[in-house]
Length: 296
Image (cartoon, rainbow, N blue to C red; front, side, top):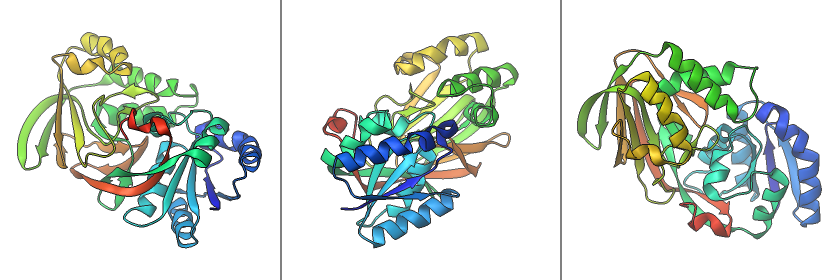
């Protein structure tokens, strides 16, 4: 099967574009026919993915998690096939699937992997593969996306530290499958996957095949205690702390006491209030043999 490489060359500060010649060389060595298509935008990436599926090609998203989410959404509920090559800053979806974070090494998965149906998250007409979050995360994501001072996945840590300086707790109204609660705190997240922010394991029990979203709520706590909480997110042990609550559901409605942008896969996706849902088994993806251990 021919691979349609849908590439965002500027992803990861130009990482995907720089890695493209080596990826093509590796694909040729593996005997994988392919063609390269450069994206102009996420909407353009969706168009390219739809065209690839119509032509019977595998749509391979080569860039960041936002690009993967867009391509996956274009293939949902159809027979199209998704491939993933990591080329962004965080590469959290590849991490979730157990795909090597080096793009050339990840080519082997396209050659030897197997096909698995995975869930997607949905907000309106938009879809995401990883985690949708708001509140403190809205501020941290915006700072991370705007900065040019820090490169790589450390940009998300930088964004969190900058956001903490001026943060004031917000009140959220959260309705999970019809059950409503009001909380005051930092963050509300709806997780289809475990990781975000370049390796932060926000939802350590989330899987891609259960048709559910893990809802992670970080309640109000002193800033110093919150700062101590941040390093534990990389190991997923933060969920043992009193300030963190994890619930599960298929449909999550989120409203807040002040305006927030919902971010998913590192990109802005909607303004609150929002309804976040799940699309069980929505897309066929090429995954490595380790994906059963990775929650896929």
